[in-house]
Length: 302
Ligand code: TUI
Image (cartoon, rainbow, N blue to C red; front, side, top):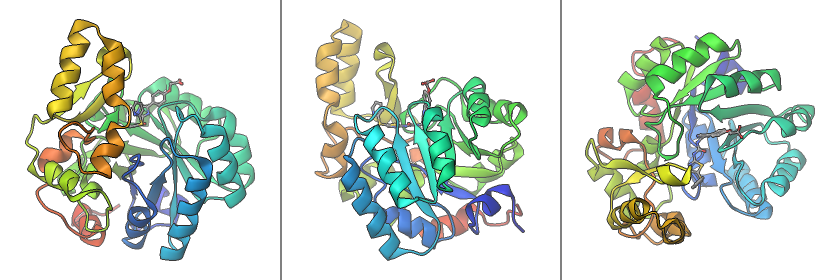
């Protein structure tokens, strides 16, 4: 059986991988694609030519569906979009901003556009602008987050738009997928669970910290700055909390700079930014992407 997300993306299982900056490399995107979902390379804050190389690398690793996640706050967003048009990437997801002005050109080259949105109003705007589907991401997710929970956001967005809705935030196992479908979603976006895959190239310290995480370890910093970010609790978050309470936002920002790279590449899980969702508490092991996808959809007809 196939639903609208499987048909739109030509995938076997209606799962897309979260576009995690630094974490979601060509290797991970290709592994998720080969497992029957849609893989995404995260452009994050990377320059456009790096993104092009990643696209070429993924093409060498899979002939299945993969795309690119564009972080709209990146200083390179214009150049990255230009590369995506030149490369005629099959699908893009976007985060941390509004991609409306780029949609006509992307549709022109046949790219499927799926914005990640934190509200009903933005979902409706994206539908009007020509988006093919939306990811409704609740604040259980890792990284930069909105206000609403997955439990409330997904059904409200499903009621508010006609295009298919993909649920995100807090989904890491079979129960989460069933719940998302019950809320009106036709697909799921999964991030944290894929960090702990064999194919994910993050430093082993990062994977170990996600596996060890308990229910209340994925916390939010930066509410005072207007850019709340969910990461695993560590020395850096304790310091950031203190600086935030003191109103020292300048020092706060300094800790954040380069911290994601430090965690992902160098394995600095003390002062690095170990972005992960609340579902980290559900992740108990490291498995192949094939096993993860199989487990997610066990017993589910869609
Ligand atoms: O984008 C994400 N998650 C991210 S992006 C990221 S990189 C970063 N790091 C530190 C600070 C800021 C960014 C790490 N994690 N998820 C999707 C998402 N998009 N969540 C919320 C939004 C969003 C917010 C506002 C989408 C659109 C939006 O539009 C505002 C507008 O322009 O109307």
